[in-house]
Picture 1 (cartoon, rainbow, N blue to C red):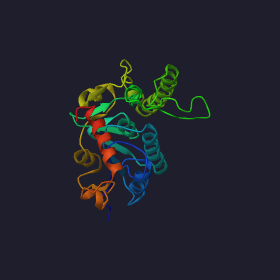
Picture 2: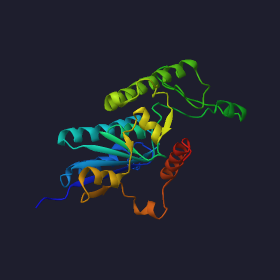
Picture 3: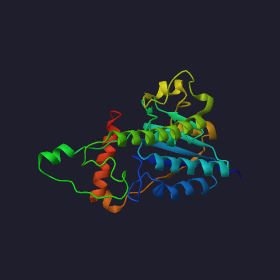
Picture 4: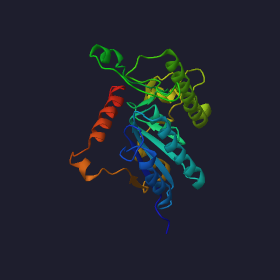
Length: 258
């Protein structure tokens, strides 16, 4: 008897960061990604993406792992964007062979951002003296408790530009001639679903279940894989680290009006 086709559904949701307590990190996602590609001989892997971005390194690691397994096992990958696949979230989406979105989905923001605070004037006003000792003239660069230095900002800008180049290379390699050659897609701007399709950032408007039935038939079996929250998180007993990450994640979504 012919078995029903199986599609592994891998949920990639939230801000992207490092560490075991971050739901969307390479460390947390590795076992799920491995199972999604290996268990039950899937006909495809579908990525359900809802992420405003985050760490470029973690985005790259997760996307590279997905691509490596897809190529090794010759399994097609489909990305389905929910509310947002922006910045690092779009980095993940670009790992797929096809990207599908809702008309209200936000896609793009192909850029790099670094933010922080400057507290030097506050400390001076309150008579607080910063004492720091280093070996190496650049060891204390961009210290938020010291006045900003022009050379430190210039050095940071070089790093941001280099990361941006890596991001652009990933997108152009994955999307190829589907991208609109007449538009500058790498300014950090973002677009809704229909416009993203016109620009080649997505392949069409479509949702997970109907699209997978269209491709693999009505009897396709969807098997979900996602990070499970601990019992402490489920009852609201998060630690301080979880609270701070939650604030940062909320701020990341707020940049896109979500």
